[in-house]
Image (cartoon, rainbow over all chains, first blue to last red; front, side):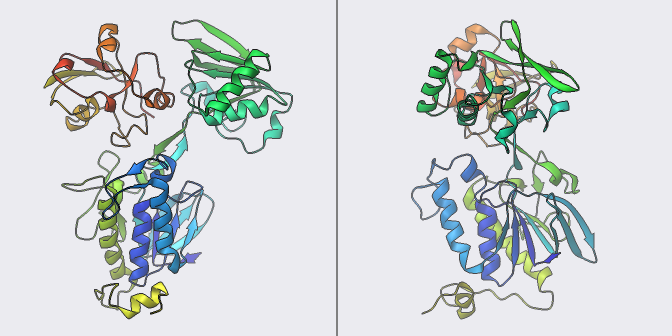
Length: 338
Length: 107
């Protein structure tokens, strides 16, 4: 059990800056994120896209913004719990007991939900029959490629993950690559390679088809694919792999009684607390009259939520407002020597 | 201004007057029309505002897809050759009478 002042759910820009504000006012926090890296949507959706509306920063990419925020909170040495997801919240004696998917437990008076539009998860096949094999022979990521040796593998998708794995697995498996159109969005070199492998019959390339059904009797045997005009084909398959990118799912947050309004959490604008004492929501996931889904709004919301957390984390102390330019206490916390 | 018809997967029809300059996606969101999620808010980075343009004449009449839209559509739920991202369809008088069909689900 880890005891802390605040658990932040979400390591996007809003969560990171809230952590900074908590550090400045002398609170500790633990940050949990479902992705395997820090940065949230900025790093997953648009690491290379320039952002033009961060105050005083005329232009920066999602990745640069993330790196700068990580740099800014470095002095506080906060712990990140990546590739993990908060699964369960329980209130006991005015403390929140937080459990994650990987079995970590926290005890905290405050939770700040900075979860964006939810956690990123792989988009799955739309076919119901695929669910039965999910995690066994229908896969959306690869942990151990040796299981495919000498097997028939059918890969769906047109991006880098699909192309890279088709190329890699073609060395030791019978690979079929299925994509819904003729163009691929993967790197040009990979697309070229796929065409070569298809020309010399190393892989079976089928375009303008998508999945219709998976079939098997206990274990997976084949996959049926369809074209838009209704033709279908059946391909032998020991494994079916889908690479359709990531989608955002609210997940367990929806079950915490936070009066959700269309995937967003209503908050008050004084401290961004939700209807539950000690649970705050900031960034894209919160809603209030006039809400703007801008990163800069998330920063403001995080600063106020941090002060809201202070009240519950230090009930016997009075919060004192200080400027970073003037306060020696803050400079100590930042490890700044003058 | 254009009158846009949004038809849910279950057949429920909605009509909205959408101001020029807004996207077809925004027209749905502002009028509380279900079936379009728009998780990323119009950044062409999530494919949850996916619609079908079933009328071929209309499909051809729409502004062509920019680079990236088809890549994003690869990641949509059941994309077809008449799929569009509604955040990329900017409303003008020319779109008056457009009908879009929503897929069974967005994610």
